[in-house]
Length: 286
Image 1: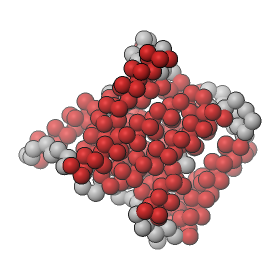
Image 2: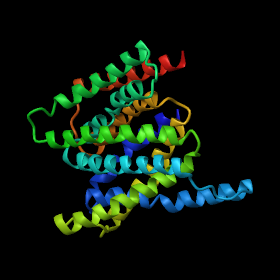
Image 3: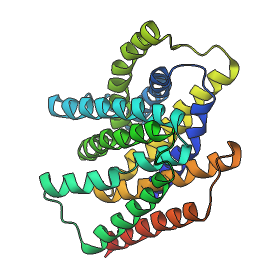
Image 4: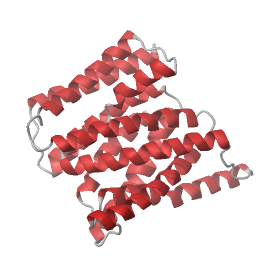
């Protein structure tokens, strides 16, 4: 339930990227940076409540957290580019093609068993994504779709890293340290983008600040927090398939507020996605 709610929130908050007045790399930085003070406060309050000291990651945990932060930096970099260059729904559905890469990686390298029902559910979800992408073949939105596909690769690494982090760390600790690593990587890239491409780093309008605040507090703190929490109680493979629902929220916002036309095929695609998620969840529960 936590991953499902987080996926829908992440999908709905994609609209904030259409309102920003800064570069896509800077938007990624502010998304994680603005959440850090709140996460730090949550860690402090938790330590005070339990009468314990704040625990710092050991060397092994630090490596996993750094990997999670690096993967999330790549995820945000390409996802934000995708959201600008193609429809909200397509960008998000393509990013969640990690529903294929995660279980395959888990099967090949982590020895996770994949049932036939899970494979069938994943295939249905991917079929829905394929229907959406086919609409952009030969159009000017293909570059945005390519960025979305690249996002999926980085998100695979993020999900698998967070899954391992949650074995020994709390949700708040995992989110704080991985976000700090992500922000540290994105800030110099945002400065380079400003010098080379003239992309603004600081918002210049109230709407711009409200957009990055929405990304930080709603998308990252709440949406990503729910995903990190839920991954601790689910397999990484199942969580990745459920995250396909992120595209449903993005597509709804795009249709309602940005006049992104959707037809019968899009409805079929969404039904395939939801049906695939339901089938994968059922196989995990058996």
